[in-house]
Amino acid sequence: MKKWISLFLFSTILLTGCAPKESGGGFFSQYFVEPFVEAITFIAELFGENYGIAIILITLALRVVIMPFMLKTFKNSQDMRGKMDAVKPELNDLQSRLKQASSQEDKKKIQSEMMDLYRTNEINPLNMGCLPIVLQIPIFAGIYYAIRSSEEIATHSFLWFDLGQTDLTMAVIAGILYFIQYRVSLIGMPEQQRKQMKWMGLLSPVMILFISISSPSALPLYWAAGGAFLVIQTLISKKLYTT
Image (cartoon, rainbow, N blue to C red; front, side, top):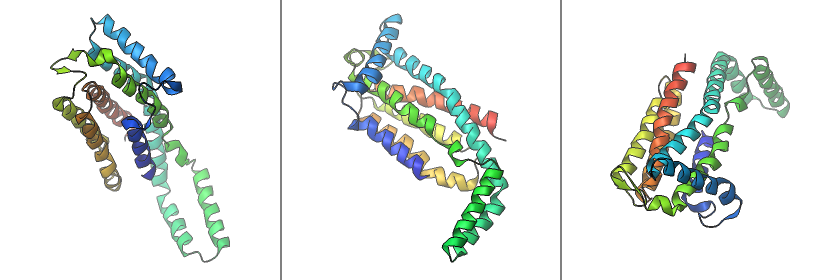
């Protein structure tokens, strides 16, 4: 649980000003921000300078590329959870003995038994890890700053709003879509795990709404497109890998 909170806080800080400034240049700007600015501009010109469509298409394209890695992570997580449930009685017994152990020698022996239990049942907690999420943070930070730094985007409109101005409706839509994604992610989840995910799940839509309210509406548009895709991705994950 702590690792997910740390990851979210890290990515939130990254997206709210502690990353390289939009106009600051450097490695991050050259390899992550500028390519997205050029890509958004190129796609927008294909659609008659429609930067809203360009943002949506770029966001969805990135999500499609990353989706296989996310599905694999979800599958690994489900597999590991099933294996952990199978050995839970033995694991609980070892943990109970570990708490009652009075000497370091006894503790090491019990810990060794625990490792043997993991090894015998091919349980690797790291296989439930968050590497794909860590890898995508700089990618989505790049598109975030590309949207914030582009003067072309700021001077265009899409649907009912100006991309360079704040829009409360768009901010609320982005927050709602991420809340829906959180609710969908709880489907089929054990009650204990649902309780553990409660506050972390709510933190994401609240922070997105909070940031979007004071940001150019191009940003909540980007989040809304990503949030809608994540709802579909989560439903697919549940359908494929949840028994």
